[in-house]
Image (cartoon, rainbow, N blue to C red; front, side, top):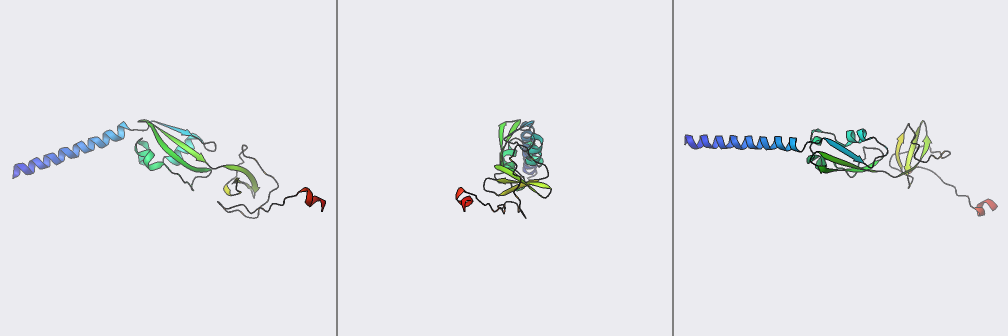
Length: 162
């Protein structure tokens, strides 16, 4: 009886050692050394890495794509979603899908960015020179992710004749 108990303890210890060695091998063999960022014009590569790869498992090239891919991101301005893919055992790629911003208007001491449907996407104190600026459009209030309260008056040649 003592021999079988001793043998089962030795077998359990050996399995535990092999399991621990497997975990150590998994985390060292699939260690992320390089992160490539694609599709971001609003944020730098460093900013995207900081936003996307948060947490202790982001340094593993197998687990990062499983845990850090998000299709909908409400907490990241100007970004609709991002996917993390593995390129090789030491390299992952973050593909960013940005929101389609078509213009900005002044509001208080900042700029309001909106999409093609007139929905308020993001506000910023700095103006992005790449996005068209519409001076002369005034709004009384803005709510994030809601349509800007703009009343457009269309002037046609018929209206001008009357």
